[in-house]
Length: 476
Ligand code: AMP
Ligand code: MG
Image (cartoon, rainbow, N blue to C red; front, top):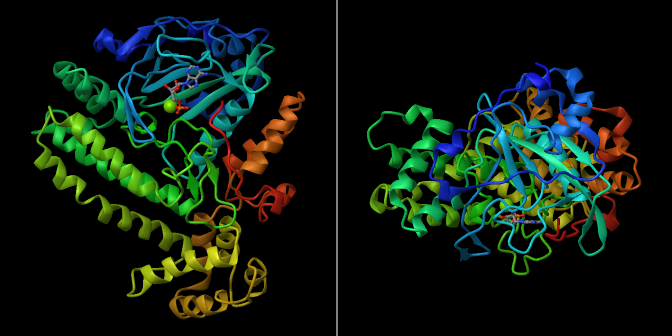
């Protein structure tokens, strides 16, 4: 489809007007295309040729609004670092319409009713990070929002220094957050809360339409998909960094990419967010914090169903999480079935990696090729013990598993490449000088992280020492 044939709808506007603000995008000065995502365009039925047109840049800059567009920002509340903030909302994201079941949103397109002290803008570096990372997560099979394209500009945006503004066009099947429910509940708007729950069921959980007790079912599903998402994050070594309830998707997607990180050396207590002084959102705390967030959601859901019923789901959370984690880790380790001692084997691997300062992604990928020669694995750690001892146990565990099958399974479960922060920084440094080739290259490996990509081998090694475990600020 040509861009000028696009037609969009706005199903969210059927909800109470208190829940959104109709606002128009405020375009950036002299915008230019940095990257377009062909596959996302294809999903939206947009012709590939259209991505090279001026109209595409105009769409992303909010200057061209498709037929049916009625732009708006969403209101929500949220627990930020544990403290309830009654009114937040999209301070810099403007919805430009829905195509099929995908909602398009411009992040960085100017101020909204919810901007508070912010300027409604997003700088180039944070936009590159969101653009690339959502693609990387999607290719790893982890539920996430996506991006259709990224534009830069000559628009000055003041942060610690003056930077330039950018816009990502984000695409998602749902933008509803735990905090959206918290908003209605805390305002005492129970009828609207019910309408929101109905909207979410239709949007993301249609199998519950017309069923008995749909809101209990909905809560139960959110518990399950959140537990699964946490298991997926933990299994690939992803640290989100700002798991406030307003950044938790009701549809179990990874949303709002900020100061996130992939682990370099394996570290349980890794904190990627510079402002997270006490490590509330550290890597290891993620499953527990997600449960805390589900508790906050349960309170918001209490006018819809009973706490007793929801608690039945919530008490299952730890078990569900551990089951999923075990499932993903067994795939990564090439283990068939479950044998007594497997959970200990996995836990002890984490400890061993941490003690030896081993790069997590590199270790898992190297282990995928392991056939008895330990040289490459041992070289990835500071010392030989306790890795040797752990490998003895691993050898014993895999001795009856078909070698070729195991290798195939492991190479499909352990990416050769993840987008570590030092790689993204390289793309940002080049982009800030007008060179987008590193963005292009990182996009290629983000898209196919399990492929060899011989030309990008230098990104498959351990993170260089000086770049390991750095923290990032929230400023974006
Ligand atoms: P985050 O934790 O990054 O998702 O952001 C928390 C809240 O602050 C959200 O409601 C954002 O929309 C808002 N926000 C962040 N940066 C800006 C900005 N530059 N201008 C306006 N609002 C912002
Ligand atoms: Mg957010």
